[in-house]
Image: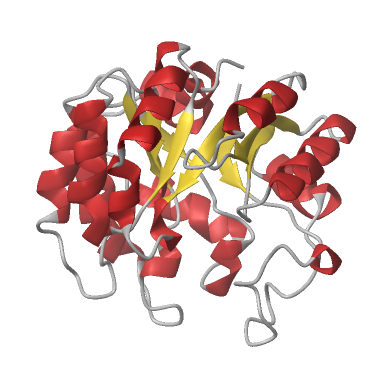
Length: 276
């Protein structure tokens, strides 16, 4: 099974997406399954993991409803507020859908990332880790120490770092990001999505070669068993077309990788992680 492990859909009239403004015209429109499915087919992909793009319960309900109508959506990653008192109620609601496969913590957007280390938050996450629930971790490179401390406190977490932890590709910075990535990889339940890179580079002046050190660092840290391809479509359209995103990754693979490793990267690991 070949899978895009990270993409989004949205409808602008829902007004969930405050970060999508008219100043981002390529994103300021509806994106729904009929828009992506031809691109998946062109790349020989069987389907995708649909990830939340707004921190609301209503948006998770919306994308679950889309998934129920689309065979190309293989799983949904929703949103829960682990700091709130009702997260378990909503989790129990969402998991009634067979396509609900986990939730995402949007650390990137937190004014103070240390809230994820508060006792109630840690205890909530420990509960989901005990049930082996897949959890996406959205963070930026400057938050890696805080998120690593969270993983230390929840060492059995089944988690995946979205977008390689958003390294400073535009500035060609590798450290301390690379060292932190290796520390995350010491926890066997943590995976890494090779996604979201083009929007961390110069949107109009990137070249394929500048992504290689970051892709190889993730592969060296996590090995072929714990990395996943994700397009981050349609957000990637700020800097690259869907086919360009897939080409960047394919052209950056180690020469020693054969069909088995490529199969794991382009679907096998996502299938295992999200229990498809």
